[in-house]
Length: 309
Length: 182
Image 1 (tube, rainbow over the protein chains, first blue to last red):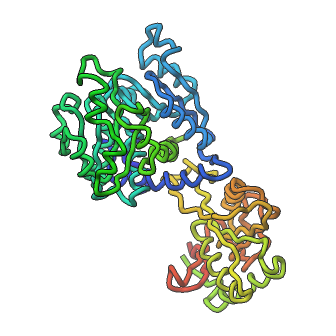
Image 2 (spheres, rainbow over the protein chains, first blue to last red; image 1 turned 90 degrees about the vertical axis):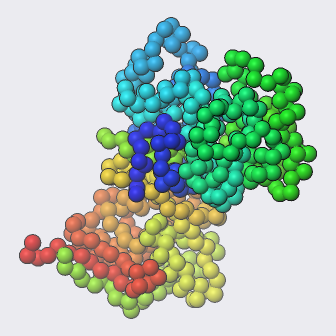
Image 3 (cartoon, each protein chain N blue to C red; image 1 turned 180 degrees about the vertical axis):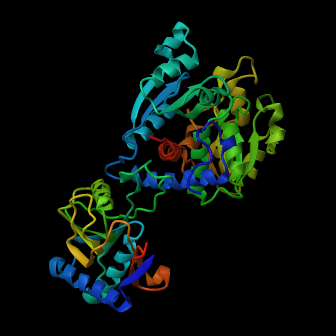
């Protein structure tokens, strides 16, 4: 197989394990490229990519922008806060206006689940989902799994605990799909109010005890509490949450093995993870960020190779 | 398709040995010279040259592999996406003499991409090109080799195939021609 089985990246759910392997293999080459003195290849000189961010983001937008630029694609950035969306324009109108300026690919972040997949049905450009509400965030899951593969050699057979606000996390859902497709075991851990009721249908283990999850896993992926998505109170206070689900060095030192610590960012230091752990030698948080650029280059490159001229 | 053997195993070996001596003539002890093979088939030439050079010189010349996938000019003009091979240049090429190496020089487009890819690693003093086979009348670009194993005159629709003992079971170079009665 020499081509992705999908023509857009809207979610990990649509990918086959072979697709994921191809993305990883391509990312290996790009990781090499971005560590050269000249971190740029001319492959996508004739491609224009629009980053459409209807929700706030620093790292993901920057990462996509760098990935596109390192492939020599042209990039235009759009953020909803200073756009016509505020004046009442619909999503399709906004996107079609941008596409009439000859854009080949759209990277979309939107608060509504399914927004990316909706766009694929209405516009001729390639679409990459950069986070659609509480649904999926496929490139984050890919870079997380890629970072695990880089650190531990393989994802197959590893035990990964996703800890924190599972209910509001698109990272959690995409990670579950991705890790399972690659043969890992997944556990989610958090206060029962933040574990979605349908989680059992995904064939993952569930725990409400942080120590138990850490004992079980090889990798702990700590998620941020998404206060901006929480319309009601799910736990008594942040201090109480930190006491029960905050990852500390003492907890790590109490384990009989060394586990890998991940975090998709942004970190709330002192809430889900202490500074000591986040900056400690078991943490691969900054490797995740570096790998993010390589993974996004791979996704853009493989999708762009399907564009016909 | 008819085929004709251009180099048999013995000629193959002689040719590589001669190329090594030509290299030594110009680069003496290889203290400031590196060999870089183009993926995927040029690396076999490098492996073999390295063996012969180390026997003659008593030291191993510095060698690397360069993948040019992302620098090609036919991206999206092909049916399938181009899947890259490994680049392995763990040394600086800054102020070095670089010998770029491939098995067959045909249109010159691969070498053009190779030069682009190479220069992202730094600024070498000098770059030379070594090829095992030069299909001399089929160039699309103004690119010539400095060291040539054998020059052959071929038509555009003919094919040159280089086989290697370590991967194909035999050292030889063959030319596949269109049948004369076609």
